[in-house]
Image (tube, rainbow, N blue to C red):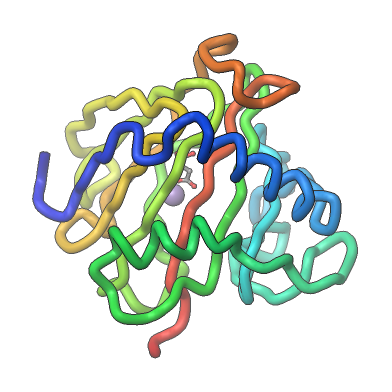
Length: 200
Ligand code: SIN
Ligand code: MN
């Protein structure tokens, strides 16, 4: 693996994953999943989204941005759970707190096209991502969209850190393998992506 990419399988065990899902379910009552749309075209994402933390990543016809309120309810995002803040402190190797935790929900057939996380001001902070529920086929390339790519299976409880030379690599989700986990009551996969947005 290229430098700055760190894959930590089974970071959270089943008991910890269940506790986290219970916390997330409460937060999601406050900030329900919604379906974002692509800039300009207005085409809906196949992934449903919500956010936790001071800032949430949103996409609509006007573009991609971070904002402090849920786009449909207008309410501030719920706080990032302690377990997840603790994860950031343990693996980020970055002195400041994350400001955003994107919550992606993949139901059967959902995927995420190849993209870079580049809406943040400080690329010295890594992107820390946690998978819950069904296993996903994660695709990662290089710094150019057209470059060579490889795949990695992300299972429930796995953590992936994209920092350093890997911070701006293209990545996406090819597909989710339905029925590979019993963690989420309604099946599918939740991905939490932690990011520092502003320069400290
Ligand atoms: C993302 O890049 O926003 C999501 C990646 C994932 O679902 O693992
Ligand atoms: Mn991403």
